[in-house]
Length: 327
Image 1 (cartoon, helix red, strand yellow):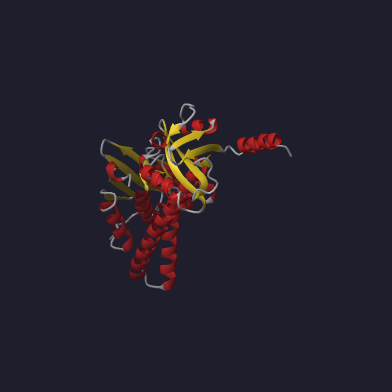
Image 2 (cartoon, one colour; image 1 turned 30 degrees about the vertical axis):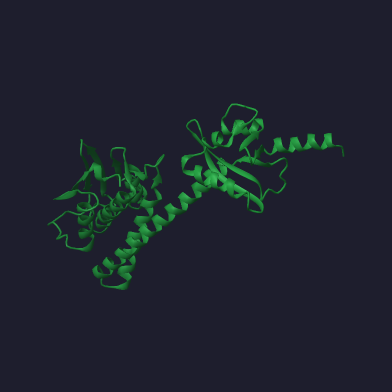
């Protein structure tokens, strides 16, 4: 195997691996780099570049760490790897600089190594970390809510069977709401679309064969934050379960319409039932579910609810502050 053949195939391997080459004179702090390295750094090609000039392109948060790490390689034996960010215009790239420390392989006071573009890997790692953090956050929130619901439900039911049924239904409603919560672009947080949220929450009550389609949802298209989605899930779960027990949704001929409108500061949602059992007198509304509705509206949503017990069915009007819906 001739040296010419070896050099040619080594260059092919370097090109195939997208490896950028560098050399560093440890006395003069002068870097020499191949064309791929200059392209990676977004710099004009030149015979050489000073270390200070090169490091000026490193992200300010990483700059001192990288300078110290390069100096430390002079006394650290074996291979090393340093990952850091560089600025190329408005873009941020991740570079991995690799070489050997303790002057191993030094020639004419010059050390050798490679640069690799690891931006894709770093972005994937950051995505995994964000996902893990988000999952941890949501699980903790759900556990806290589940604990609270368990305590309240135990005080508002008389039998274990009744408690299990009520708690399961409330937790299921929470699960349906959280299924719709999605990350927003950038760092805007997480949200669900209001109409989608209400449709999914009410869907289990809209499957009565020939009477399918008795529930209609027509509300403004707007996003609601994760905590708002949880609060609305609890409110509409209570309204729908009460209707399924005593109101329009307890009758095969009953119907429900949820409509909405907005002004500059307020979202108004109207829950209108028709076709259910005749209402003789308004209920007392002293149970846990009613208290929870009032608590969610007065606290998280900074809103209110008015009940109008018409003979044809309940008409409830919810007023919510738009500024409170994004959290």
